[in-house]
Image (tube, rainbow, N blue to C red; front, top):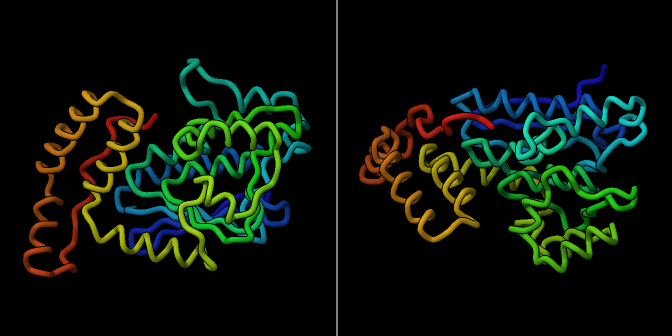
Length: 272
């Protein structure tokens, strides 16, 4: 069977590339499992300090490969099954689990980014895309709702009325429109190069601080002021107790940016 993605790791940066270009990187069961597994693999590798999510071919991902998924009634059950109602199922993990990695995840998007592909891209922390990229919350074209965890991203990135309109209409919008709506962080003529440049910039900083910042903002975005202040203090103490904070100070004072950092200490207690 053709590989569904490729993982390469160079200079502490992992690049995850969707490789089903002949099918516009549409999501079949093998693709779901491949993405789920590679996220777990990245989580276990403490040398990785940034992740770039990209795709081969003219399109990032055109969404669900309905014909392939519908070959077996069991496929839908495998995608939707969960042991506990509040847990993410397989379909949701390929979007939401990127947020739980302790390093920045940057998506580089070209061409069509539809349905499940859009929800995967929104799982990244930062997105670069071309002006002529094409975005759509496509599920209602098939009489379905977006159910891959994208709703979590919609409510932080878009106003509710825009999210409702796009999800109900399933209409396609340009990269420029997607940027105006908040789905894209930065427009770029070369999203992959822009993603690499940003990744190189971010890994110059403490991986502990990067992990703490990501976790703090993810958990506190919609929480109470009291819980946000509590997390700020708690995470800061944990960062201060790590070796990388002292290294960061030494690098700034000596202007020696080549001083190596230690492996990340600030990992979530468990990967869920």
